[in-house]
View 1: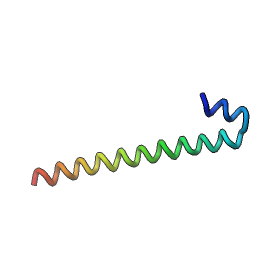
View 2: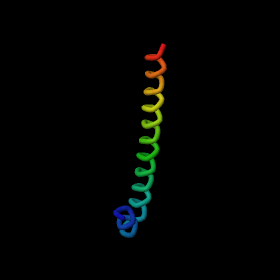
View 3: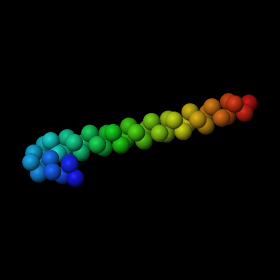
View 4: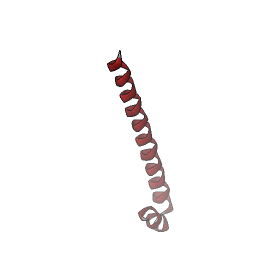
Length: 48
């Protein structure tokens, strides 16, 4: 909703906010995958 309101006032700012939001989503997904992989690695090492 905030991004939509900003886009109405200034299209460039709105598009930039969309890019920032998408980058944050991708970064969080990458960190989540990394965390899950490290947990799995730790479990495999603990079982050896």
